[in-house]
Length: 217
Image 1 (cartoon, rainbow, N blue to C red):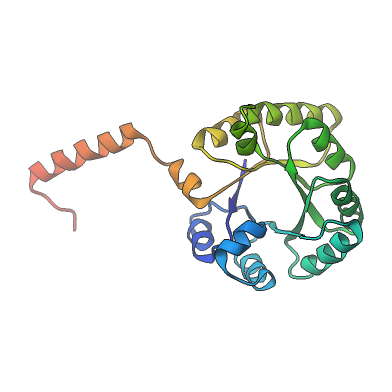
Image 2 (image 1 turned 135 degrees about the vertical axis):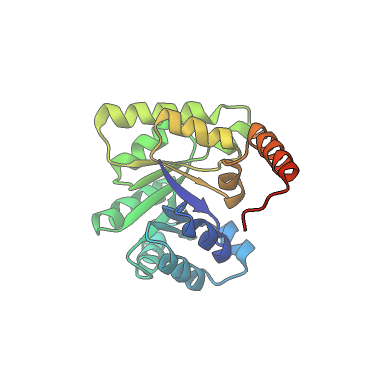
């Protein structure tokens, strides 16, 4: 399973990228706002930093304008993935841009029917938002399982990119289901390394080592 990091903060991306934990990056208008950076400038910097797909989102709501914005974003770098919302205009944009050879990430997916439409429109990635479904007492991982089944039934090439990840359990369940990609904030990716027994074991090792009076350096 590929790891995309969901942020527009260059330092955070660089840290994870150096460890080989970044297969791509996703951004959105909210993340760009938090970064305080110009969208074209920061997207270009991210695309130069990582080898994998970098999602940059359109902000128009009508197809013609979305297509124009998508074409402009795609010119930033070869690894740009244009991100469009799962609306009818977004699907039209997806079909046009994907037909031109541009990678497209269809986002804000909340149903298997939506995911089916995105695959038919040629999406490179579909981004179901599991955390937001959990927020309204719907198990977001059930959606991932449904999409996996549908895509496997018909051998769709669209990759399932699990988004709105809030916990390490979302990552684990995505991997067990067979999602292609997860995108998560840097803090969640780092928490994958945490376990109380690891902490307890290390504390015991260090206490025992101190009693030896030795040092390695």
